[in-house]
Image (cartoon, rainbow, N blue to C red; front, top):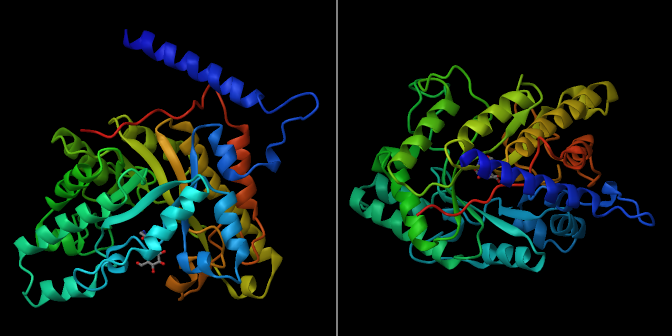
Length: 397
Ligand code: 9MR
């Protein structure tokens, strides 16, 4: 029965994909994928191609190209910063929705989906909250209630308008932290214990029954040793499996995809295997913050092509590995880049010593790089029988 159902699903999927793949081509108008945006190419697979949006850049009247590309090239958008708690509630009790609303409106005007980022994270928490906890004026019970209220308020406001929410972000330590044995880290685990994770998903579900609820983290692109004491992917996998077993309404795991050309990184099969292990749990997957940074050596800064070319090629390869892996897992619903132009990227401001940059798909003059062309070619040349249209995911009750 199961096999028969799968065969039927596969047959329909192959037929649909075959139609989609041939539809645009007619004798008079040959199919020209090079004329299509990333978003349009993704639609062939039911895959959404997103970008994080810098709201200052979007609003800048002297930066029309940013707006134009954000609107035309992508089928999904994410707030790079304006849905974080410190932006939404800078002073206690006073929510400032203007920027977050502006992004949701922008998406609606442009027919884009929205990935909500982020409900619970240890960074960009408002000062009044951290200082209240530090000086004891906010007790543990009050802190939990404040978190419940925050999640409920934000998710309710955008109920029905957010496709995927990053409910909990970066809850797990890294092997370079102290102690090196992987553990739940940061402000929330410290003050509420790891139970806040299940609570957060339940509160988010109560406020929006239809949004897909994600756990989101970095350095989980591939499995390592398999030992949850030092393999972060394994740790997150075990966590997700436990949450599911407890009936917690988690719908997906987002792999951020912050890579660098100076690192060994992963091949397509390693990344595909990781996505498929997560989706075998019944979860959706997504790449949520893809960028590939490079060291800006003296040669790069001086414009030496021999230093620049290998970096552009390595960046293209890494963007492409994640895209191919996403295409190979039917449950990988979206591929979001963390900014699309080097003109607006978090990388140079964060990695200064030694300097890093060149992390996105377009250079500072909005010229598309080789990475942009490679992920487009991945979208163009992928198809059945191996790559099937996206699976449907319904919010878990
Ligand atoms: O890109 C964001 C940058 O503008 C902020 O200053 C920074 C603050 O920590 O957060 C950046 O976005 C992060 C995202 O929210 C979560 N994953 C890591 C991203 C890069 O740091």
